[in-house]
Amino acid sequence: METLHDEHPRNGWQAVKALNIIIVGAGIGGLTAGIALAQTGHCVKILESVSEITDVGAGIQIAPNASRILHRLDVLRDVMERATVLERVSVRRYTSDEEIATFPLMPANGFKYGAPMGVIHRGDLQKVLINKALDLGCLILTNHKVTAVDQKYSARVLVHQGITNEQFWLSADLVIAADGIKSCIRRQIAQSKSFNDEPISTGDAAYRLLIPKDLVLEDPIALSMANQNVAMRYMGPGGHIMAYPIRGNSFYNLVLLHSAKLETSSGDVWTAKGSREDMLKFYAGWSPAIQKWLAYVDQDILEWTLYVYPDLPTWTQGSVALLGDACHPMLPYVAQGAANAIEDAAVLATALTCTSNIWLALRMYESIRKPRAEKIAASATATARILHLPDGCEQVARDQGLINPGAAEQNPDKWSNLKWQDFMWGVDVMKATTQMWAKLAEVLPMDTLYPHIRKAYAFTLSINISHKWLLKQLSA
Image (cartoon, rainbow, N blue to C red; front, side, top):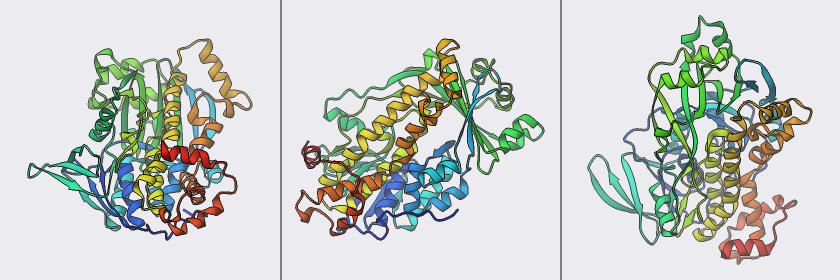
């Protein structure tokens, strides 16, 4: 992979003051935050509740807005060596393999957005990030389950050590809660605001399948799908399927969205054992190619019930910040969950490089990230309905819209809508952060800013942010 041209001035930056930072959770967002913060001189301790970080999960997308950041963190080469680069996405009717439309992915979007995209097994991405974090001196402690932050949100966490069964407090200058949708810190912040943070059922669930290519070597139809670097998107009544190869085309990754059974929609958002019989029944009338793949599925399948959460009133409290799924859980329909956690990490680290004032950095982090992440999350929720339309007039209009000239910009499927791609993939959140800091340099005392922020003025030529708006955000 060729080195990307990157004019962002972050390279070589060091924080004006090294902070002691605790990150709760060693997932994609937490590890990325650890890397970004350690590279700029902070002392990072990552607390993970499990006893061993294992190879779990399935395929996820590395979109240009994420790969741009991973490049700056010097991990993109290792990531892309393990990723599969998809050439296009083929959108199809559920009853057949008839292609309704096709949209380019790579290399077209790599050239357009200045950063590549691909798909990768979540475990492979996590391994790359763990190795980089350890190389930079991050301390990763497994069997350390955080159960609370102190009531004053003064960067103290209560930890339960799984091996010794001890419970103790750990202190730092800043706590970053990247512990996912189950986050106890999210729940604590919501309760402190008297905010009802109960999940709302979408009525949907997903099966995640990872099928070895070795099983289909004698099946020409399935083998052809596994060997081509094309994403397949089947749309049908009440569900859809996204499928593509990963791990050097040695596995075929399928995500099958469907209507959830009423008895599984009980508020338990976690993955549970699914029924192969129920899966085959729901997709019985779907594409012959899909039937080929489902025939290779054994009895042990997982089902993930999907919920949406209300937007929190705040992501920060005192010296505590939420990150990733802990503050903006996303449905999978626009494939931006991991990418937005990576964006969170990058913005927070950039802000803490510009100033040692933690309160100020957290205000900017939330001001930049919260509106954008919540808008992308809302687009995923809206896209679900479009993909799952029943057969009828609205479905015909949707499909016809994909075929018509200019459809790519009017496409109701936000993931393949050109205008929405520009918003999701084209925005450089690190650049946006330095632009905001450059504007702040004009209105705040210089002792709150890192002197090298003057370098960021090169990025303010097209910015339209008023001083009044900035001061309003910071004083809110």
